[in-house]
Image (cartoon, rainbow, N blue to C red):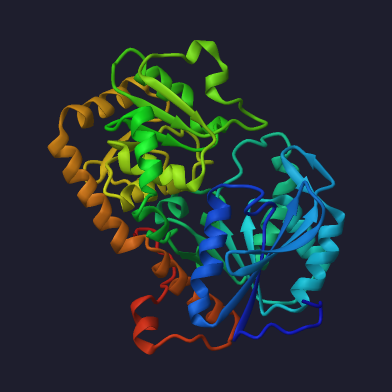
Amino acid sequence: MGVNERWSAAVRVLHFYKTYLPDAHGGAQQVIYEICEGTKRYGIDCEVLALTSHASDTRIVGGHRAHFQRRAAKIASTDLSISAVGRFRELAANADVVHYHFPWPMMDVAHFLVLHGKPSVVTYHSDIVRQRFLYPFYRPIMHRFLASADTIVATSPAYVRTSPVLCRYRDKVRVIPIGIDDAPLRHPDPALLQRWRAKVGSGFFLFVGVARYYKRLDVLLEAARGTGMPVVIAGAGNDDQPAPQSHAETRSDNIIYTGAISDADKAALLHLCNGVVLPSGLRSEAFGIVLLEGAMLSKPLICCELGTGTTYVNVDGLTGFAVPPGDAGALRAAMRRLHDNPDLARQLGHNARKRYLDLFTGDRMARMYAEVYEQVSGLPMHLTPGEVRQHALPRYRQHGS
């Protein structure tokens, strides 16, 4: 598609983030994908601009275009690309709404270099937790960027209440919980199901994710070691944190490491597991999509109380258990309670599924973003009045949920 060619939908939305599928997998990338695919039914055409370690190109991801610009450098975990600024200028000129995904400092700078003049939406995925040294230098740009946005979207009421950044922008914050479509996970491949059952059995606790520093797999390993309760750890390491199976001291008879897995493998493991465990101990874990995936399949959940979306998905005592971060003893006790009480585990899993259907479906999230795009652009959506009323977005209130 040429730079000056108009998109045909009622509203054209450009998403801008540092990485995207299929090059990188993570919560933010999955959310962008769900928004792009889910809002189509409301006459919205989304495109994505991201960086890549490969050659610059344009691909079709799902049913939408994704433009990739080659990454030039990476400084303090921030991906940089001068060519991406020029490409952003071209694509933003053809958009009705620019949708940013925070945090990514280069994005803030590009916003002010381009000055596209289009309405902007920022999905605030996480506070900046790790870059303590550079953060004071970046903070003025960050606040100027957030102040310039028409709407800031937080993914849970808890994150708004506890974020020192978001509390400054309550008048423009909307809460739209992350939602995912259950179709890809509801019916696993029977052959994969049989293969994984033969390899890891069933009735185990499952962790799925990249072994990033904030995931605190060390706490899960300490909690599980020597208990006899089976634990499957599915995922790979990254630049910051090696895969746990690379460390000899993490070996234990009841812990199985799968390495990186496909989405189809994940579906099979989720069906076979007894519960989902997310031991993340820092606010970088702003939501925990794997908790949604477990809830979708009626699995009880265990996570840590971080003041983020993890305990918005997983309500302690209702859908599973929330324990203090870094407390291996409390995590072990929660796992033991589910392991030894199958009736309780089933009831918590049933409650988790109901909460997913009430709050976290992909369709619900798509409808709410469609309304945001309508509000900031002034262009009409293909929404019925009933749908608009049902999913209206009140401004965030301190005690709202």
